[in-house]
Length: 402
Image 1 (cartoon, helix red, strand yellow):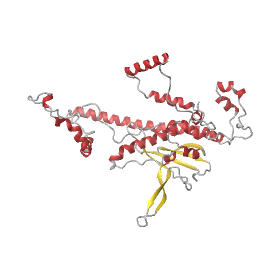
Image 2: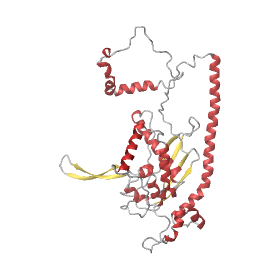
Image 3: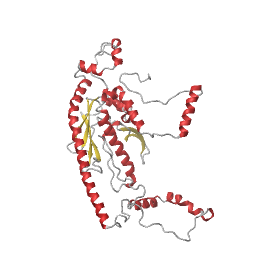
Image 4: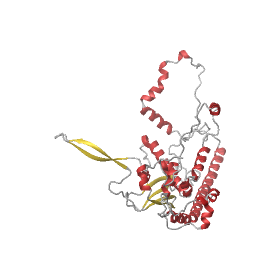
């Protein structure tokens, strides 16, 4: 179950209510008059430029406004004593409701753990089949066949041999790499260099912690890149529940990767020329610089400190993205790995994204779409579509596109 990540600087000011409406109204003078064009000086229109040239002034004003959020306007305090007593009573009832919400979320977590213990043997059996340690039963094969596969069964070749006909293939090679490349959020992180290492990925699993949180475990066969047998990443929640009883994400910690010499995929080696100040001789030195890699996933961003106001927004965004990636692996990839491997899960992912779009389009857009449809029917416009996300399978020729 995906847990919400509350923003530390949530915008609590909504439409005016008795709680956030100013206690006193703006004064109205009988001598006030509506300004006209002639009475507005050019200097009055330069406020935006003044703020643009004084970012510290803007920051000071924002900080001052931030201190006003949540402060009482005095409305509640102005109510009669018997009404304030009823308000206090409703708050007491709400606290009881909050206790039940926290209890509900805790029981949901325990229910998740209960069914996870039932899923676990299925995941373990999946792993043995993927890695060639066991074969599925006839009943499992029949249950997994589609009607199309049954019709084409007579035309299929021997499943135990490759195209050369003389080499036996164990398990399902590159199963997890293919599944990850079909999961859009993960595919964007995988570079060509990463693929060589991820080909050795033999299992991805998760486990719940004793405290609220979970751990993702990536298991690898022996490879030339690092000595780790497993690389894990742990997501922690705060001890106290949030508003509504939800668990609040705290931070993540990744396990250190023991890279072999010159095999660190998270850095690139650059050659730079250095000149000696005295002898004027030059030399070439090699330096390392960070680079994009899926394995940066195991070095999550650190939560911002209270005094890091300038970078807080950027870090909050990175923390949310990092958390969402962990949730995608936990809630999507691990439970339905075979559907990501075959690409069947992509259609459901696209459908979910479509549900989040606005239900209504602008009338102008509809008219443009109708015009485009008419042009296509008349042959005036070629019916071309943007490149779509393509299902990836092992052993396919990368130069051949469907």
